[in-house]
Image 1: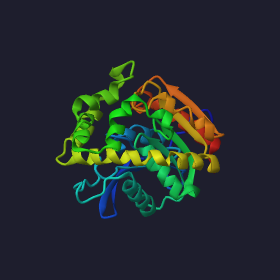
Image 2: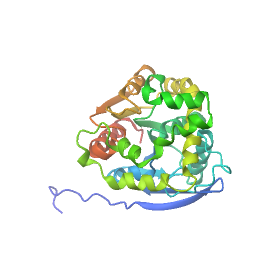
Image 3: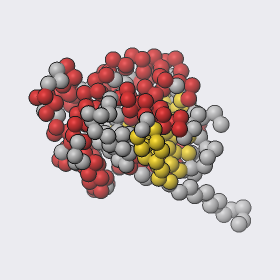
Length: 298
């Protein structure tokens, strides 16, 4: 090879693994060199680590990427909702155990949707581990809970069977497709197989009650917003915000308040919807590479 020829980037295949945590099988995807800076990828609803299927190999030459599925999602265990506590507190307990079991000492966190309160709760438990944050349509401020959340807030305040049943529309195929396509200028960029995979998970017997339990439990995150914000102010993790600005579920109003509490925050509002990785994956990956290269202490 001459001096002018480009170097061949080391190739790191994606590994698909399972580890036992809190009596559950937790599936995860992993790629990258063992000693590389770690990014813990925490998925949203109603998907799984599959949402990171393209990002992981894209960044594996620079980072070690680890993406678990929560109980009830993807390839992880789906215990009956009557036997397992589907709450955000318990999901954090599982992910905390997962991080311990595979020996992650320090990491950046990519948090999206449900992954945001899971990641921020994990950060409260172990602030010393968090090197940086990557926030994609993940809320920590009440400004980000707008009209979409009104029927869900009604369920939080009065968890009757009627209010629970009124939210069943959130798991039907039409809604799953809407989550992927709403706010996307060119829907031909959205891979429909991802919606199908998510819907297969939602349609499993017993999963409806799992999702309704978690929808109720999401309300327990809102009182923790001041604690999340206090964590931001005290520990000042470098934060990259890559946000689908056309999202109705977590609109752009939830992205801007991070600047109130964080000194080192870089914000990119993307012309996309809830699942911005589906349409802007390369742009997000490039932002992550540049941001972490500047901000991580090697």
